[in-house]
Amino acid sequence: MQEHLLLDATNQILGRFCSQVAKKVLLGENVVIINAKHAIISGNKRNIHEKFLARLEISTATNPTRGPFWPRRPDTLMRSIIKKMLPRKKRRGKEAIRRVHIYITDIPERFKNRYQKLVPGEIPNADKKRLSYYNKFITLENLCSRIGWNNQQLEV
Image (cartoon, rainbow, N blue to C red; front, side, top):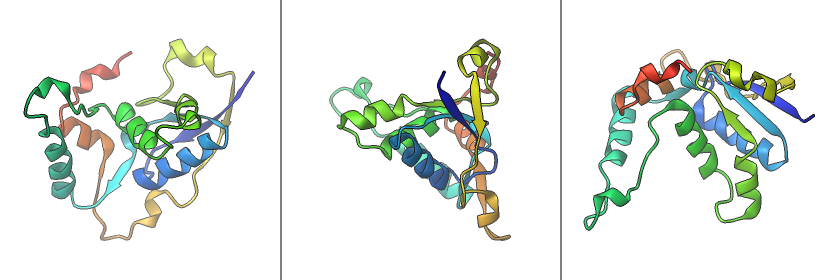
């Protein structure tokens, strides 16, 4: 049986957290991330929303149905961020992204038997304590609900 590293994304700064996860999966570790919707993005709420909404308006002039398509769920958004931190066209990058399993809240009951050996772990220097008292932030759930995620999809 394979060991899986269990990481909780609650109050973790998204960029720092994802970069450390990308490094771990490149080294060959299997990673399970829970509570993806509680990860935080530091910055002004308005600027973050405008940045992501501007990405959604980009389309090709000839055929808008070709994309680019952006994820709207917290788990798929976090997966795409991690994927962009891995080597894109290399075989090891494609194999590394397969070792990452991300869940919005907790591991659903139907997938619990998949992970027999879960080893709890932490990512250093990615928690909310790194932000000063005056820094502003939003959660990934807040951002995703603003860009079009329907929260009723949570029940599995």
